[in-house]
Image 1 (cartoon, rainbow, N blue to C red):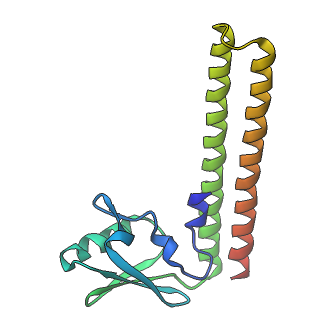
Image 2: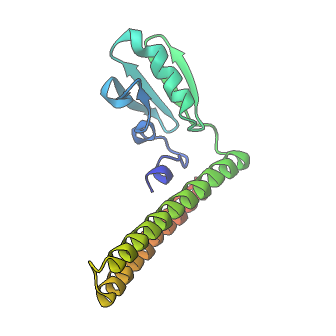
Length: 161
């Protein structure tokens, strides 16, 4: 869901840059990020020697934004929400949701394998293993439901922007 939340839906917000790192440090620890309009962020890097690195990191984050340098500031702009841009963002949302569901299912398979190993090693009884497997399955279904809801909400906001 974190990946889904990073995809813009018409109004820009500083959280869009949360995953951007300059070297090993998050961008937000080395710059001031402010909203200057409904589609523009202004990034003011505290150390001018880091500005080029910050600009490059934002560009390489593949956020679907335009990055320009204006003096000591970096401007991050969302494109106009045309049908083509919406379709691109919708595809990114669907892809992020799919990856999230796959990660949850892989974690569930790993948990099931661990439970089977514990049952075979007689650490867990058959009943306890079955009970734990049911708990894992419920947790998987709940998490996938959250991902589906986040995807639907994001797509709805994208279409209304």
